[in-house]
Image (cartoon, rainbow, N blue to C red; front, side, top):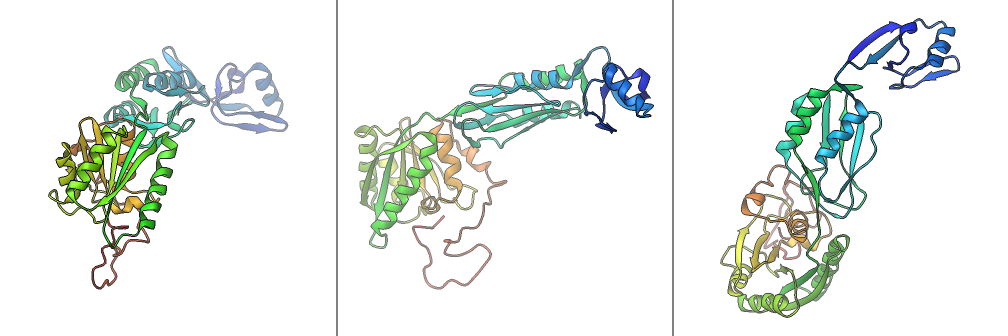
Length: 347
């Protein structure tokens, strides 16, 4: 692509590089300069204009953006018509955004003329939400550059994994220190979390804080109630793999994949399973409606995406979330006397 100043008499058919306003004439940036526009500007005394001119093999900005967006588009996404070198991708259904960061980075590394911006990986999205934008910086790119960018993108680099698990069972363990009202509120908050995903609580059990009771409740929720995901809220936070909740999951015939996560609030989360049904030991902060590490894992599991130990330990960068007012011992300091650990707000 050629770019620069040319005599107005030679500008016909070329692209106006900038918006030009003279008298009652407005020539928009990116517009093709026609004979009438050129003549009108000449009558105002303008003699030169900055233009862009495509060369053989160049691909115009809109066509280039649309072609690259089409390569990136995977399942449950739609591509809107390009404009001014930009092409946006939107979620067609609610779910979790999946992408390969290395492929997006590879596209952006091809040439400064080509850019792709996305929402964060595994971001929960709703129908109609914009998840990515392709922007071609100049008015055209060489066809070879576009070809390299499309090759780097591969096929289906972006997609939305839709929510598939709909039947959630909830276990709440009891101790004398935990009020029934706290359990009631916890269930309401979880129901609100689930609503945008189409999932719902199908059954709940309130049991003593013992591993045998946890085992029986998990088994019943899966085998009798048909839960395809189980969340366990402990009256006391999980302190060790040998504690009540992990021991109860294993006694039910399940296993613990990982305990703890580098996300705060949310450190004391447990991920396990019984058969093909995920079982989550929720951290105390999951009783709050504010975003915490529990949200990150819950949405992935509802979308039937695997959550491995490697997935969890990779969450540390960006895992420091906003402080929560209800935290008994703020991270920034402050004296706390006695036993300040509260099961309703513990990590």
